Each structure stands twice: as structure tokens, then as C-alpha cells.
Image (cartoon, rainbow, N blue to C red):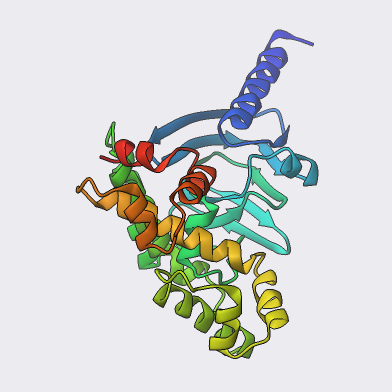
Amino acid sequence: MNSSIAQRRDGFDQWVHQINQICGAFSAQTLGDGFSGHISEYQSGALKLSFVDACQARLYRTPREVAAGEGRKYFAVFQLEGTACMAQGDNRVALSAGDITLIDASQPSDFTYSESSRQLSLILPYPLVEQSLRFNPVKCGHRIAATSPIATLSHHLILDATRHNTLSQQESEATLDAVVSLLRPVITHSDVADDLHERIFRKTLGYIDEHIRSEDLCPELLAREVGVSMRGLYRMFSRKGLVVARYIKNRRLDLCAESLRQSCAEQKLSALGYSWGFSDSSYFSTAFKSRFGISPGEYRKQHA
């Protein structure tokens, strides 16, 4: 093997290694002798993204790479320069500068860079997307055209955010929320709106939010109030990959976390938990740490 080929191979192997370190498990191959690639990472608070440069390369995730992954998340892929092809499931999309697509990291996918390409890949946490879309099916592998106002605004927002060296936790979380809110109209399947089961599910989620502070909120009460059987209630949530009691608990915990981020007052943590339907302060603290990795008190200090 001559030195130029060896150098290209070393550069490719290093690029793939960095991709796996930053973006997660991927397999890769070169598509010709003209490979070039580079990746750089930006992280500030909740904002985690990478700039990926590639030419004559292919990245892909098979079920094996997915199984070795890091949990559920989405990649919002912003095409900055050049062209690329993205594929997921039955969807295949060609991206040009300014286009955006969404990729589910928990499903196989394929990224092809036949020509020079520069992308920004933004990690969107799974709970943020699912809750923002109210568990509507998410459209992945579809092109969001550069000519659309949504694409233009999203590009400006995320690129402007990366020009700041440090964002506070709250600022970075607000940026992610804003990106998802901007993309919501084009990443949500709209053909389920008239489905009877879907309407009942929306009604159920609405009832949960209206009564989330009540200690009495439970699957039995929920089924009775929305007019379905217990079996029907469990099946309805199961179709979304959810367990109804766990959804109620996690919804309460998410609202508790929001209160901790926004409140400046030194409210007793037991009182906070009680105000969101947790009657047992010890259970509240344990459940909170299980969901967010730190105790409520540590979470409040982190976001003070």
C-alpha cells in the first residue's frame, strides 16, 4: 500500500472513530479515492451538536449499531453546504444547502455523501420531541425545503446559538424548545387528526394535564372520565409505546422540574412534590432522581 493510500485510510479511520465518539455507533465505507472528512463538536448546556464534513463516504446504522446505541434520540440534520442523501425506512431524501431532515437514532438509517457536504447534526432528546408533539407520530427521513420559512428560521436560530461560547442551562434548553417548536408543523403526521382513537387519546392527555395536581388521578379515574374501559385505556397508551401510570408519574416529574428551573423561592421540596400530586416526599425524591439522574435539591442548585 503506497503512502498516499495509507494516509487516506488513516484519515478515514480517524474520522469514523470521531463520528462514533460524538454521534454514536455507525458503520462506514469510502465511496472512492477522493474521501475527505472532518467532524467538530459543540456543546453548551443542553445543546449538543456536531459539524460533519464529508466527501465520497457513507455512514449507516444497521440493527447491530442501533442495539449498541445510547438510548432514544433524534438527529435534526441541517444541510449547510453541498449535497447529501439520507434514508430511513422507506423514505429517501436528497438534501441541498438549507434543507433539513429528521432522523430517529433508534432506527436504522443511511447517510451518503457522494460529493462535498457540510452538515450540522443537532441532538434532540426523545422526551422533548415526543412531549412537544403530544406523542403524535414523528415524520423522519422527509425533506424540509430550504425555501420554507420554517427551515430558514431554524437554520438562523441554531447557527446563531453556536456563535455563543457559553449558554446557561436555561438558555440552551430554551433554544432546543424553540427549534422543536419551529419544526413541529413539518415533523408531525397530520393524517391521524380525524381518527377516533387519536381524538380519545388527545382528550385523555388533556384530562391528565388538567388534573395533574390531584392525588386522585389514576388509570381507573382516567378511564371512567374519558369513557373507555381499563383494557382500552392500556391498549391506547401501549400503541404509543407508553404505560399510562408511568406517563402520569413522568408528566408530574417533568412539571416539577420545570417549577424548579423557574422558581427563585426556596420552597420546600416536599411541598413542591405535594403540589404536583406526590403525597410521599421520599417517593418523590427517589422518582425524580431516577428520571433526571440527580436529586430535586441538586437539580434546583444546578439551575439556580
